[in-house]
Image (cartoon, rainbow, N blue to C red; front, side, top):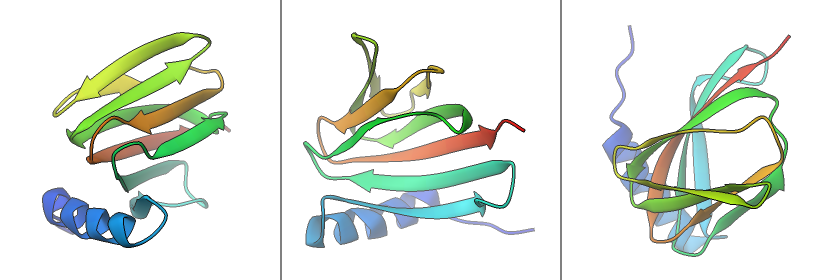
Length: 109
């Protein structure tokens, strides 16, 4: 059994994002060699994960802040506590304010 404070990790990663490229992340469960991967990503306001494809099924749980998920001309806004289901299409994610998300991906085999 492992226990991790996503809030504390989010604060730490926001500090790293501010000191660097505007975003920082850390995988907390699984990894590239596993089917399930959960990654905490901190993004400073206006930072963006540019358009990319899914490696499988994915969701974005907004732990703090406000983000906009965009795909095929549609936008979905997420705020503290919201869960966004990532469409199976190219998509991007932009932080409208300093934000921390939990990205969950299950690779399709």
